[in-house]
Image (cartoon, rainbow, N blue to C red; front, side):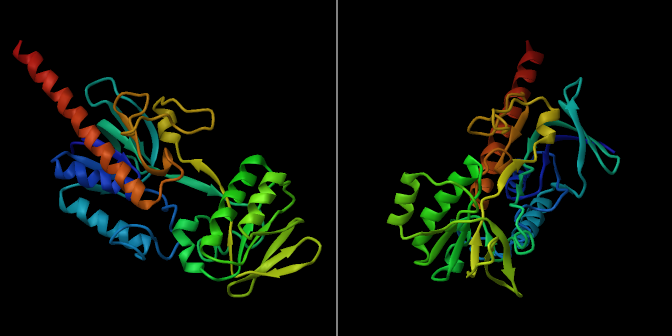
Length: 312
């Protein structure tokens, strides 16, 4: 069996499938390795995707996968456990957990990221239901309800919590930022007050859950009723394949890539949340499409140079 592909795409989310659709329609031989659960698997619906607003995320992936397969793309339900540059024109070798070894002229990594959630009881259990992180994704669904924002003690978590708290009054007039022992600057307090956001000090002990989120309980025993809470998880890219292939990363641990997703390694691209933590589904899909066109152009250039050389 010929296991050499024009492009192997690692990751079967919106970015990976969008890229695969473009490349298969360009008549490239493509394999999509789609092991692992999608980041938005806990969410019941996705929003902000024109013509797909409110669609369950799994439905988008199922539809996209069928489209890719319809153009001849191969969908592989497995995981990459090893990746390296090949010694010949194939470019790269990828080893899968199931034993297959795929060879690819080009590689696109679209493996997304993982959310490291605050260690507060109730957060993980209600994640994606009434424990949320993106106002643009879920703010409308909790409009005009009592909303909480969970603070954090490190500088990054504090900045993200304040940013989200300042956004949320667009959707609800009842927003409370639970400081959770973080220290707010005078400027931050002024801005929160100007937006009508109340601040409650003290450590958060747990979320009060009874079939749904009912409130936030503080370490001193106080309980404040809330129907939704926004948290600010730490974003960690699933970048093991990019690291194995020798790509450069910035100081924060994110792969360096140009606007098309091309990394520092010739022949390796990245798209979606693995390179851009702020990308919503529609943005990730667009990034996958842009990367696919750049990859196809790169292959055309390489093939053209070979043929010109053969003629001379």
